Length: 194
Image (cartoon, rainbow, N blue to C red; front, side, top):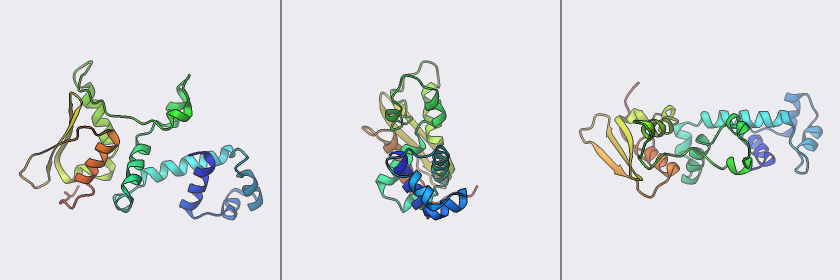
């Protein structure tokens, strides 16, 4: 998505018109309209506003908002949450930044480690990106393990006696996180109070 598309999305998400933006910035509605024409580059101040909006939007997604979205929209939310931050991209050289914007962090699925705990720490950090949504509030434990490329989710629901295992062979990182959502925040299971 280019800057102009992102700008339109921000305006729609906030319910702003060019007149609203003009009032906030001290410009005229016509100057906002002309500076955001598709043949013009988006002004730097507006790029900052777009990035702040998108960052805030991603972090403020609630479980209720996610439940109302289509599966594809939730998968897109997960991809955005795992995308590389602008500060990291700015430090990398000799890469196609447009290609990198489509990339995101992924689980280390091999299960092979250079030092003990390496895969576990890396993979747990990815799962923990979604802890703020309450994925751990439904379980006494939730653990993702990879053995020879096969991911297995181990969990025990809060106030349940059964230890459960779910194998997710042939799924990628984003799909595995979605499955964790299905088994926790999208489920009708009892939630513990924190």
